[in-house]
Amino acid sequence: MSLKVLVIDDERPALDELIFLLERDPRVGEVLGCASATEALRMFQDLEVDAVFLDIQMPGLTGLDLAQVLSRFKSPPPIVFVTAHEEHAVDAFDLHAVDYVLKPVREERLAEAVRRVVNAGATVPSGDTQIAVERGGVTRFISRSDVTHVEAQGDYARLHTVGDSHLVRTPLSTLAQEWADAGFVRIHRSVLVSLAHVAELRVDAGRVSVVVGEHELLVSRRHTRELRELLTRHIR
Image (tube, rainbow, N blue to C red; front, side, top):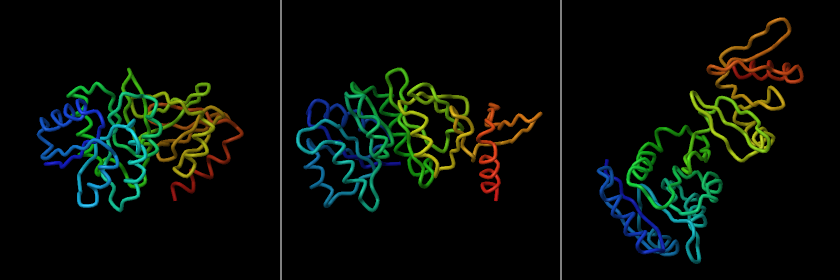
């Protein structure tokens, strides 16, 4: 593995530090740097890279602006946002970034970002969506296909994966609309399940439930018929 990487940051010390750390990674073969998104666009006229490490807040064209342009490329490079600002994580998720690293950058955290770049093509199923989640001040991305079910927690939602869970600042009602086409169905006013992860449908004395991973989740009477029909179509 010998990645060719472009680093973009308008602050010279931050740019030099990131270049230095990336050059220390054995998976990275060449690191190029530039000080603005506009300069990067000019470079892309004659340049192909395996990944872009990109600051967000820059004069003129921002990192998010550049990422939107790159997303229209026939083969857009994986993007890792490197920023001092946590509040842009949702926008980064919308642009399908492979990682979101907060400054000051630790070498071991950057190594994890490089690993995600290396695995980007292999680990993200075609059409899958990456979801920004925060824990302990660190923003990471999980694949929507790994989410087994979702529980409402007020104006938030808790995403469950096998052996873990993550709180996101999105209401369950919003996810129910946006994720319907991805096979997520409401089984209760406060619960969504992924049809792909439903292992069993249980009926006991009129009580209907589904088994998802290690969880048995109750299905409300209102949603029972719709769930049966959806599961039947999904199995076919």
